[in-house]
Image 1 (cartoon, rainbow, N blue to C red):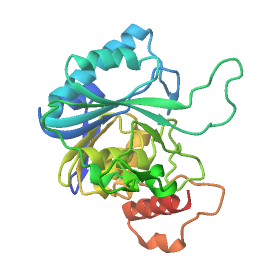
Image 2 (cartoon, one colour):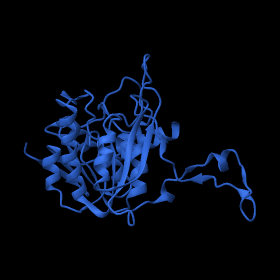
Image 3 (spheres, one colour):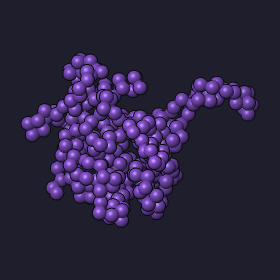
Image 4 (cartoon, helix red, strand yellow):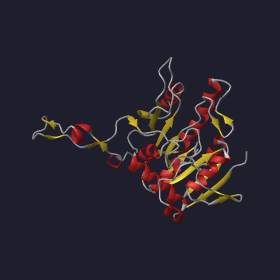
Length: 299
């Protein structure tokens, strides 16, 4: 498959096979990589089934693009990797040979409908936080502080201090993150079976990169990684193989407003939009950003 590239204002989209596209990226040029590959569980990605012939063939494919990602990462770079719970142990062991795993994160969320009745249904996805050099990497703790219940809500006193004082009201998140999944009625919703929430990528990007850094997502899907990167002054490289999702990226990053004569619009929904018609005067990127901000205020 021939690779096609789109770019504007430091945001690049590569349309093609992930292995071929990664081979075109310069080695040690990326500050942060976020990997959210197909999970090999049979989801339908615009007509393409997420299912390999065997677990072995799937993992072999994963190891190929993981090796390439590691090559592209700067010496002080960071990488976050998601996977299905049944595959993560193999990916974890593989990555330990090449990187230092700092954290094993659990992203958990509410039920998405009818849950299993004969076993415990899955309500989380694992995320590995890895670095090339455990002595030199970016971690901006002050940018991702969350409320600390002990200090902010329970108002307990720490009597171990020389002068007793309340516990801090804010803290760095632990490795268990509650962030709601993307729902149809959310402004950020796109037509994709595995869309990740903006809030999840915001935390990762703010923590592990700095303004002007380059963020790579080899499985961009709805281009949430690139969207969040642009929002916070980072450059981005997004790779995607499905044309339908390329069009989402072109719109969300405001690279172009039409594609092959088709006006690029957010998915039509059957209910009244929560944000004002004044958003029609905004750029496509500003409109998406405004919608996401409104959601964060209401949930």
